[in-house]
Image 1 (cartoon, rainbow, N blue to C red):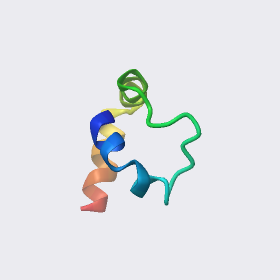
Image 2: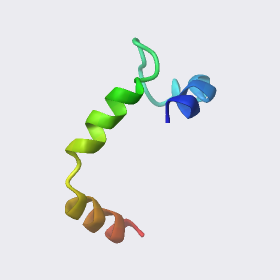
Image 3: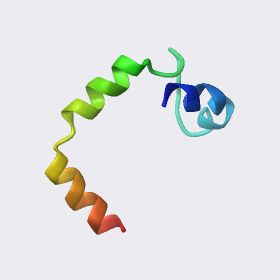
Length: 48
């Protein structure tokens, strides 16, 4: 994800303020660890 963010940085800046740049892999890991898998599945199923 970090590589994608780095390669699309200019495009992402249209949607997000990134004063510290693209988050590190550790930051992405911590965010994903906090997502409840059952709630995520329900939201994803509702979305699709």
